[in-house]
Image 1 (cartoon, rainbow, N blue to C red):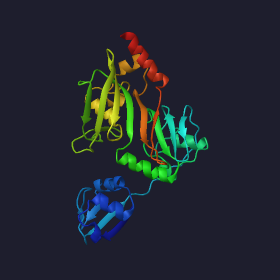
Image 2: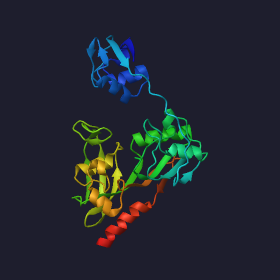
Image 3: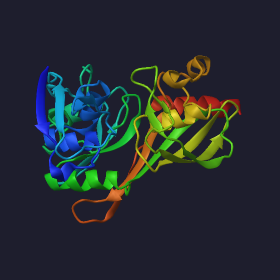
Image 4: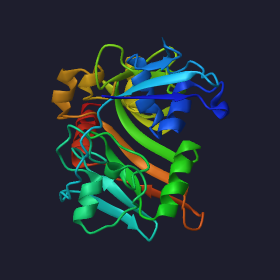
Length: 308
């Protein structure tokens, strides 16, 4: 652990602790927020929370954690990673199940970035070492369309587009039961689960999260739903439908029925990034990419249709 003491500059007067320290120390707001929540930020000797306000001239004392060991990018070939489109600015892939978007601590399996490297595809060097070129992510257990930036210009443009919500992200989900109404919007804040690590939940005071949906096909035990994300929180679709008591089929982490999943042969959440549309960073034209369902998802639908 290392400690740093520094006065609050006039230009940061009134700024939130996490935002101000992020600027001062060159760390992400997420990391700074974690340090504050651990009680390792003092403002004139008193503990300061991440949302407290800085005071010009006050003395900041920050205890920094030891840096994590760097993540080593492994160029592991990825079975089933299909390139849907590639040009000088972007590469669009159809991500298979069991593949992470990028390397991360604790994950030793294949990644989209590693698979592209193994195939000789060079991506943008923008972003942290393990996330170079990554402008959005899909869960390991979610399949479908994902875009990666190849040029530095594309990285900047696409990151801004995702932040400003100008990217159209369409998913198909098979959820348990029958959502009522059949067309609707789920507007519920999401944050980390208060009790379970690596999970998220609808939490008062969480980050604003909006999901639009429409039931496309109803079966006896489940419904096939078209989903459009207005925001892009981690596990957003899974959390929102679980909060309505309509979890994605096979999503045992968020309350899905294991008996139904086994009967349908589903071993992960039935969730697929069906389409992705955005302004191409090279010339601004609107481009759209789609992905067909993989065989395990098709098999579950076939069984449900046979029961009708």
